[in-house]
Length: 165
Ligand SMILES: [Fe+2]
Ligand SMILES: [Fe+2]
Image (cartoon, rainbow, N blue to C red):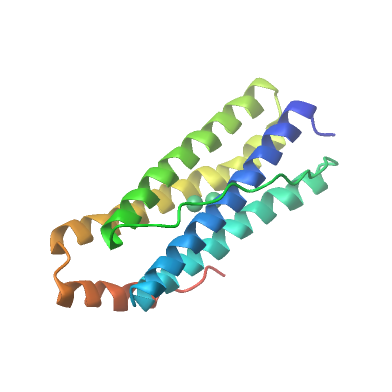
């Protein structure tokens, strides 16, 4: 049986993962608007992955006899300045999510909830990958400084992102 405190925190995390999904979808819409379909594809895949994160917590709560309580999802930003701006925001966002996951892990430790600790290890690892992916793309974007040719090359590369199995 899951403790009430952990249940509450996991529900907050579910809300946060759905917010992330919304946030990336909003950036996908912006990328479509400026005709960078590869960037838009990347953002859509990211949005789907965030939804999967929410569902992973959803399933976990049910497995442990907890209860899922869905909350309202905040409105994500809808105006962005440039492809570089969206990856700056992506990196900052993922760094904040990492902090949340770490806080959740600390709570699980304090509550001696070993099963939740183990479940969270996957997310800790996932955050390392997400921060790295965002930061790699951001570095490239800084390098090319909006040169159209280079931007289109990055667009093609981002367009080939595959969904995680
Ligand atoms: Fe996530
Ligand atoms: Fe994420």
